[in-house]
Amino acid sequence: MWIVFALSAVCVLLISPAVNRRRTGSRHLFVRTGRHWKRNYGRRAFLRLGLALGAAGLLAYSGADEAIENWHRTRVRGRFSDRLSSFLKYEGERFWFGNWALVAALDAWVRSNAFSRWGRANFEAMVVGLPTLWTLQRGLGANRPSSEDGSPRWRPMRAANSASGHAFISAVPWLTLARRNRLVPVRWAARFGSVLTGWSRLNDRKHYVSQIILGWTIAWNAVWAVGESDAPRPAVGKGESGS
Image (cartoon, rainbow, N blue to C red):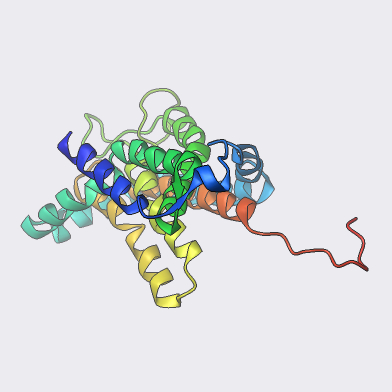
């Protein structure tokens, strides 16, 4: 619990020297959510999700999921990977949703700066993507590697592990950073960072690769939906028609 309070305090300190919203005008916290949902549940996003589902199904039913998990457990996992994993998994814990919600509220109603706008984009992406995550987790019904039967195959409503929640939550801020930064090295570093917590779930035998792919893809779609919806539209010239 102390981690939550510490992160909340850091967020407040990072936002405190920013522009005062009382002078610039307050905005409703969910003013753009409708646009975000429209894009996240549109044709392009469903196409990406469909491709991810196809890849996940192939991994789950071909035996590749179990083979990868077994190889990683016997060939890669060790004391160092366990220590690294125990650190990385915190990037995907649920309390991050509350922290980004705090940052979003401060950005909307109190003060705004680059950090608060980044945090608000993270919160908005999670709000948009979580329904998809929950639907696939329970709807497909796959199990964890460490569960009693350890089957990655889909059995609707039997379990809630088909898409990695840690992979989703941890990927959102990294993918948002990659989308908002123009420096190519930073973009690639952020994209690499977006998969690290997913790897930690494989190391800890909490998720198969197929489940990590689904969680990460849902995050990608949500971040894309928020970024595309909030992108400034090109101005229409005086001599041009708006239609």
